[in-house]
Length: 135
Image (cartoon, rainbow, N blue to C red; front, side):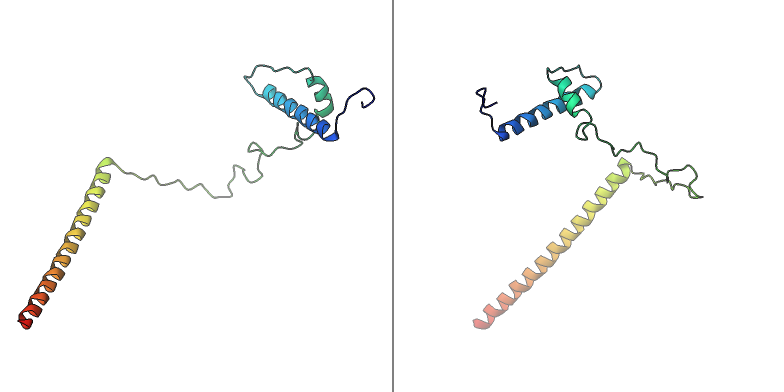
């Protein structure tokens, strides 16, 4: 190629080939999806002949959920599936729980307020007692 006037490095060739492979794979994937219109490419047939059977194009084995499992037999060896319990909650029970929570919170707040007032009263009495002694 150098005799014909082309100066192409190995890295440039590798990059070009990677781009060709990526384009081929994108078109192949697009055409394999149902409902998509067919895409064409002038190098598709040549790339298909060269890369069509490679594992990165057509995997030799694919893991999937449609494989039959030896343990998924209909005879469950005497065990039956335990039905899940459904939680029955209605708006009324939900509302009742919210009201109970609010009531408890209010009672707790009132108790804290009463305790705080008692402490403030004790501090006030102590200060008055101290002032009376100093006089």
